[in-house]
Structure formats: C-alpha cells, structure tokens
Image (cartoon, rainbow, N blue to C red; front, side, top):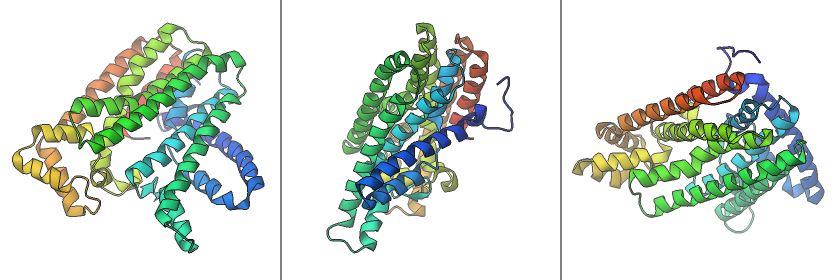
Length: 360
C-alpha cells in the first residue's frame, strides 16, 4: 500500500475489514460444527453470534493489524487472523455489557439477552424468560471469550511471536474486566467526579480499544520499546477521545448511526464524564432535572430533551468537545514522532480522524 484513497474508509485499507469478516466466518463455521455435534438445541447460540459479528467497525482488529504493520510486520493472513481474534473479545464485552446495562438493542438488533428471552417466551417454556435470556447471554459471552483465545493462539504466526503477544493480551483482558467493574461501581455509587469517570474511560475503553491492540500488533512483530512507547503516546489519548465521543453520541447521537434508541445512555443513567461535568456546573434547577430523569428507564422524548438542554446549558457538551480536540491533537503529535513505517502512520492518522469524528 502506497497511499490511501480518500474515498475509502481507513478501516478498509489493505481490504482489512473484508478479510477480518472472512476469517471470522471461517472460524465460526468450524465452531458451529462442534456445537451441532453437541446438540442441535445450541443453534440459537450460533445464530445470535453470527448476527452480532456481521456488524461493527472492526476498530480493534484495525489497530492491532496496523500496529503490526507499523512495527515492520508484513501483510499476511496470519496477522489478519490474530487481529480478528479481538472481534470475538469485543463480542464478549458487548454481550456482557448489555446484560449489565439492561440494554434492549445492540447494532440495531435485540441485545443477546433480549433475543433469548424472546425465544423462551415464544416457545412457552417454564420459568422466567428474562432469567433465561440473561443466563444464555452470559454463556454466549463466555464462549466468545474462549474462542477469542483459540483464534489468537491458532492464527498461524510463529510460537515466539505468540509468546511475546500473550502477556499483552492477558493484561488487556484484565484491564477490560477491571474497567467494567469500575463502571458498575460508578453506577451503584450514583456517580462521582469527572476524574473518576475518566478512570472508567481509560480502563474500560481507551486502553482496550486502541492502545492494547496496538501493543499486541507490536509484540507480534517483535517491535522495539521505542515503538511500544510511541504507540501509547498515540493510542491512549486517542482511546480516551474515542470514548468521550461515544458518550456524546449516547446522548445526542442519531439512532441510525448508534444502533440504539435516542438518549439510551440517559435512560441507563450512565455516569460519564459528560454527566459528571454537567453535575459540577449545574444550578439547583439543573441538578433537580438531572436527579429526576437520569436513569429513568421510561424516559420519553421530552425527558431526553430536558436532559440534553441541561448538558448544553451547563457547558458540559462544549467542555467534552474541547477535551476531545485536545486529546486528538496530543495523539497526532505522538504519531508524527513515532518511529514506525510511513504507510502505517498514514492509516493510523486516518483512523484517528475517523474514530473521533465517527465517520467510520
């Protein structure tokens, strides 16, 4: 690759998104065969995951792959296979996250636990449809976690490359689960400071989405410490900016773009940096509205509009937008100075723009 076509998403450089999908499809066919041998009753698990994996931007595989390429790794199907494993880890995180948040939808479809609850209900089985749905979704997420390991460790790259990458992958999973718990804790505590909310951003999303995938690709390629440090300088602020953009979209985003109903984060009562900043700057009237409506699962369009107005009037949205801009500038400075291949630098720049503007 010598240059990016400006009409093509950076996620499709080297035809990566299509290649990741093909590898996932091949892998899933083999796993479905195993499930079929156990029992045909397991077909709904395979169908739910197949549907989920047809969507998504493939950001984590992209950063892992271009982390590999930037560190001097050659294009190969084995590297694509290793990167694709992160999409199964992401599926695990999404399925479990939707259970914890009691979300109804994911990528414009019923969330896994809702899907299995409907299966129970339609078949008039005994017991609670909701309990069945939650149990089935937890098991499906666990399967994805197991399969992610399997795909990574059987990607075909040399054993020494996998031995270098495995510690990075282990830390990545631990940080993700720790961040998920911190997110739950913030919800249970009713929220706190913007600093605490930013800690959730860092460990639940920023490291997991960008920094650690870059490190994984670098480790597979045998990168120097200088490259790994440069990837952190680029990836961590970009990951934080990415999640802050996601938080804004969770309140103000178009459902056609987000795959979730308008204002869904407000119904779930997510304690984001955006919300923490609004509380910090709220008048008594603003705080009353926030406490009355935030986390109300029955919040209607008028309630969403009232909370959006509070976030605008307190300056919280403008503050977070400015923070996104500052973090993005920081990541570009690190990228410009990074000792990596120029072709990868070009794609990583495009990915940064796309991730923070959500044009992917």
